[in-house]
Image (cartoon, rainbow, N blue to C red; front, top):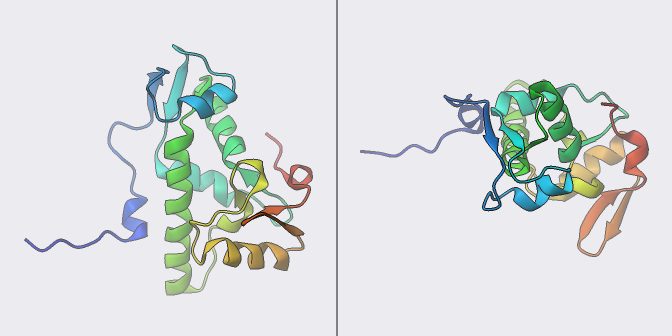
Length: 165
């Protein structure tokens, strides 16, 4: 049998059984991150489908930014839980960005301004198409100031530009 690698758009397909609400346990890969968001062992957390993460990313207008934490806050509110799994959300952010770029290449129509979605702390995402340098260029075109912190890039004063939740 010949294996064919899935396209990014195919990876965006919703998964059966999701969204899924689980009780937080200390062995969860996202444990440290969700406890920073205020969750405690036994609190309900949600794992969502990629399309829900993508919908939030698409809603970020020019001049605004969002981080993984704001995305998780929105999803937590939607599902009335304490937190959202940052690990799966981060994976879905990367998949959505690559799927958007795949679509942009095919149709030349930008439907997901993924570059406005930052990592925690306002850092650029090296897993985006073209890496953090491409994201830096796109953000600069929109008027954001980018500063270098060691080997990483960050949007200066990113907090001022975050979407309101």
